[in-house]
Image (cartoon, rainbow, N blue to C red; front, side, top):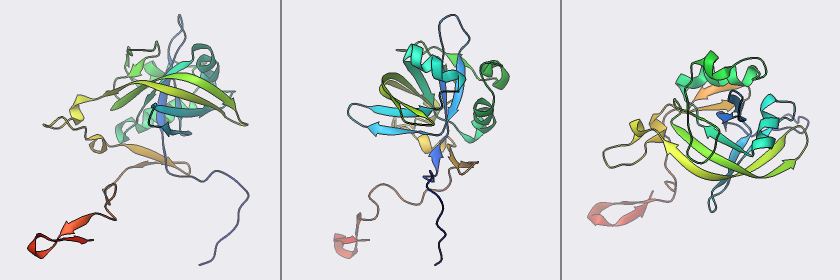
Length: 197
């Protein structure tokens, strides 16, 4: 199988395309779309977002030290794209997209009501790394849409129509192909004995 070698670059795809809401007191809140984001650790719960210093939201993040990560779905694709290509310097993104700002519990930044998951965050450290600066943040609270809770109270996030970003395109997450650990899970054979799959 032939391979071409390209110059060094980031090709870790797909990524979550999230809308990050932030805001300063006395100003309208803003939304920035971020794909450079992910989990840092479970305990304590931490995540990161990486933002270019030229972005309007960058100074807001530096000054307030807080934000909300809002997961996105296929229904939110157009709003997600809009918030990534328009600047909060020029437009009110909540107004233009029709998204609903609702108060968070621990931070002053609003949550986006239409998102299936809202993650309240407080910045613990900023790393100036190059084109993007990384904001490491502690997760203060997670809010989930009750529409995706089943009768036993389990959260069915994957039924919300989540989307991802890959190489310039937004993609809907599709059919399940396995569950965590399925490659080594044992099934019961004849006589009730367990056998490897």
